[in-house]
Length: 363
Ligand code: UDP
Image 1 (cartoon, protein in one colour):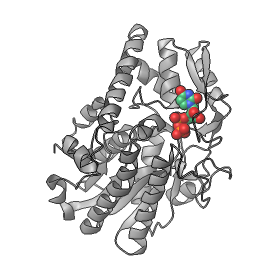
Image 2 (cartoon, rainbow, N blue to C red):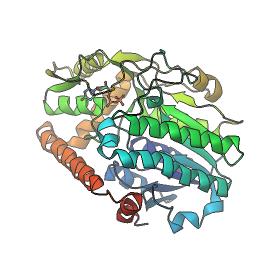
Image 3 (cartoon, rainbow, N blue to C red):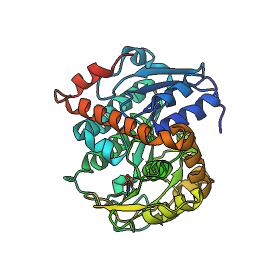
């Protein structure tokens, strides 16, 4: 990696699950990081961990609103801008779909304009969701996807597709130097126990002795990448040379069924787990596995954490985070409650993004 000491870097969404790992990596390399986050889906303790670094600065802001003065005033000083700002788990991004779409389109546009004015390199975190419920398997970057533009996942899938379009248009018209990562399912420490994703749900349910919820028959597949590997790939992509007018898949090509994931958690915890089956959500993709040849060749990257090691570390982290098993139930409930409250606050923001921003832009 190049020497990036003292570089001023903006990370939108830096207090979130993947963002907090990326920020830590950048801070430890000596970069000065300004983290812009509305804390919609972030755990407060992610932020507390980052605030220990003196080269870290936090600005609470929702990118659907005009960027705050504390950022705009340093326009020409930014050299790198990462955009990870968006709720990413299906229950969370569907809770306020209008806001999800605007975060991806309006928010990405604002950050791209900042990159243009700063002469900064810009990295968009896109998603495997741009492939929808894929007919091609595994998914390679040139596959155009099978996405519903009207379904409940569309606010995120189509929002990210539009964000990619904007990003590549800025590059094609010479307005910004850009990178686009398509991130597949990622897991690990700093996940919100209440975000509703399969890994956090299964591990937290197992730790608390609750039945595991499997949606559908559990034969749908995903490929899970450990968050440390994902953050490393994002950094490598940002620092890669040349014109990057193509997106890059970032994920772990090891594919498994959801019920195999449950079996793995059960084996690692040394315990049989009771399972309850729920209906499969609308438009839930049947299969997902990245082709990572481009990341291998361009970034010299591939995941190095095995699923067994990563899930073990995640179980340990959630066990510590949630406290003793007896306390786990109530803490998960508290976390889910706070998510419901955030969701209901989001729903009240029917007056649009300016109203939303006025609630959160405290600088
Ligand atoms: N899923 C499940 N039980 C849960 C949460 C999710 O069976 O408690 C399923 C979900 O329907 C999907 C897969 O696990 O098929 C991955 O879901 P996740 O929300 O983690 O992410 P997605 O890849 O769907 O965005």
